Length: 209
Length: 352
Image 1 (tube, chains in turn blue, cyan):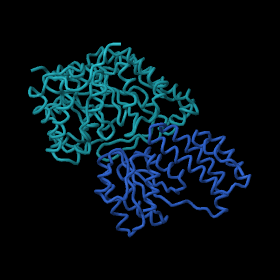
Image 2 (tube, one colour):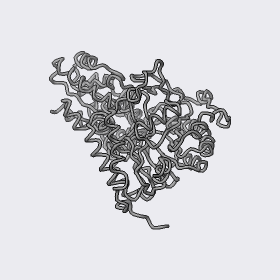
Image 3 (spheres, one colour):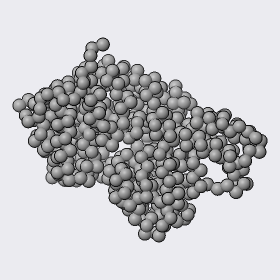
Image 4 (tube, chains in turn green, yellow):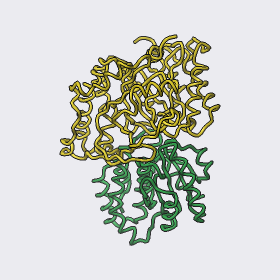
């Protein structure tokens, strides 16, 4: 049985070569895939916390996410074989009229690192498209990003589109520079994520709630 | 009464002018067109590297809005895909410089060519009583945008030399431009490099010190007018370094990202603060709310000097005209002779 602490450490350090090698060794040693997965998602959870506490910044988060992604590619066939599925599916996009994507992309990486399957609709996404995609993929989460005050108000239409589509079990999480907790409440969103680091906790809480 | 130019100069020196100035780094043509009664533009005028207004238009806009400054834009091109949005807005999307070979494709206008400064020279000459601000970029944001923010971030670890090569192309350019702008008679040199999110800088203060700060020092040596540093987001972890380089003022001190009163207490003896009037308030709030907010900012930050009222980003197309007019009205109402002269904030640091 492999010691998984070095795999966690390699992902946290963004050392993709070591992370891939250790993932391969763990699989070869017959380590239960769920344990390997947990060690990897734990690393990204740590990364999220450090990002929130300003102990690391975007570059360190990105290289950790890259190491996670490459190690996951090793693990994925084993997970499929063991019948282990992502915790949930999330639809992600930037609201209509807004083409900024860095915040959305960081959230997507962190959600993937938490074993949430992410369907990224990109930028400038009309409200109806969020609802269609949520229905099509059976998504329990919809993440909506905006960088501008003027486009932020379009989040209200996304929430309305999800509700109108009858997706009662789908939670809408909003975030982005101008967005506040109060605004999220005002438009009827289920949750607000202030940054990519907190987005994982917010998503997990929404899934539990 | 001192001129707008004199008011702004005093505030940038962290002295208390006779009235608190009101300045903006960017005013959108889409925002002012209905306010000025202008015809809508027949062609897309927005341009990241160009000017929205002629000098006469800008002076008319400044008079209408009660602005104390006018701005001239001269920026090096960014090598990114640029996608138009609504209301003449533009978005940088995919960076085009990914490799050492791509770096060879970067061509910047000759900074030693007098023709590059013809528009700037006449703008500064015809400024009238306004404070004329020269708007450009230092080089770190063109580097990030030309590579793509994610690619830039990863390259900091995978290929730092590539980042430095691109950054040096821009910094070599801006060193010359900074010196020329100073000599043309502008009143402030403004760099607009967005390097932060609401929760902090894009990259660590350590990387800032290794990569960016030495190149700020190079530019600072060439500038003989006050340097205004603009970045969205929370740049608090960088403020000691920025002040040490000789940055005169920071803008826009976004309220969602930074506590301007705390920044004033800590850095008020080293930095002039410009901004903090919330964009959400300017676009979604009421004129009364704006007036109350500006009054509070003036009373808390302006006594003793070193504060200039400004939006928390820019006058974007979605700001409500009545709110912007309420902002400049509040400057006249509360920022003049009734303002206390005592220094109520900013502890003075002892000399080293």
